[in-house]
Amino acid sequence: VDFTRARNPILGSFLALGNLVHLSEEKLEIGFDKDSFHYERMLERENRSQLESICHEYLQKKTKVVISPLSPEIGLKERGVLPKEEATRTPLKRPFEKREEENPIIQEALRLFNGKIVEG
Image (cartoon, rainbow, N blue to C red; front, side, top):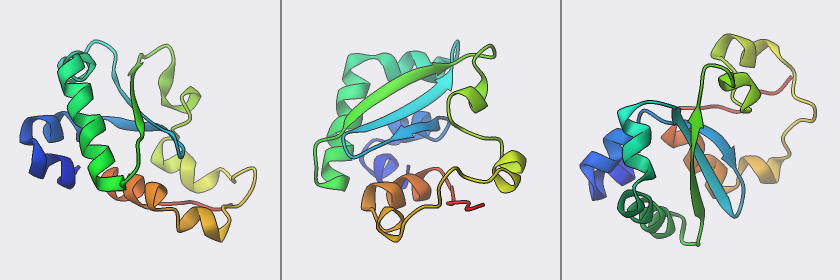
């Protein structure tokens, strides 16, 4: 968020209200409340294009950015994001391997969203 905010303060402020939904080598998916102002702005082609450019600059690789709606019916848990209290008591299906913890994309996502890896 800080890197994005330094390049584009408005885009960074929108991004700060998003939730990490999915992260892989090829794709970064960020969810926003379905009917929110921030979701609507992030769907705009220009904003998405700028965010992809900023991600490319930071990660030094092409990463597809996907903006997804988070509706009350879907909920964060079903989108793969656990509430904080559940994340600390729910064991992972498999522990993270050292190489995954050192992955720069994972490290940046953890930093951007003030996250942490929780092992069961």
